[in-house]
Amino acid sequence: MPFERNSFFTGRESELPKLEKLLFTEGRPKKIAVSGLGGVGKTSLTIELVYRTREHQEDYSIFWVPATNFESLQQAYLNICTQLQLPGWYDRNEDPKRLLQSYMSQASVSQWLLVNDDADDINM
Image (tube, rainbow, N blue to C red; front, side):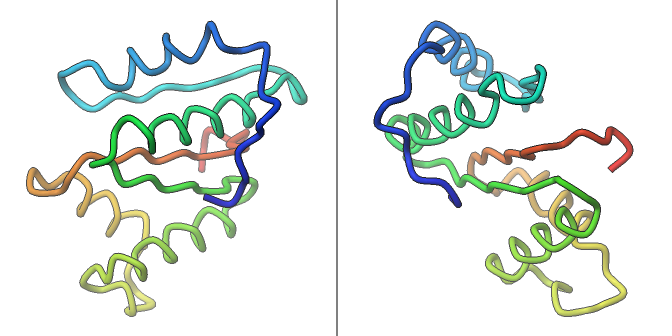
């Protein structure tokens, strides 16, 4: 997690239980987008959600991916693949995003939360 928890986090407490319910209710994998204009607190809200997830969902692996551009996205995926020592992570011909998707879709993989921060381009 690249950010410290904000001990002064306020103002979005009503949204956190809604996000937690959406994410952690039993069932199939979830995809949730936190959207809004720049500066409204999307990243701050997500940081608090990640820290609460760490506290209450101890079996979850959490990955923070800066998605400011294609290069940062690819580098973050490669870093995760390297950290997990996924087969093929060292092969320059392999797509790290594909490797990570393949790994995370396996039934044997524990629960995980992947945050794509600052993802403005839907085509990435």
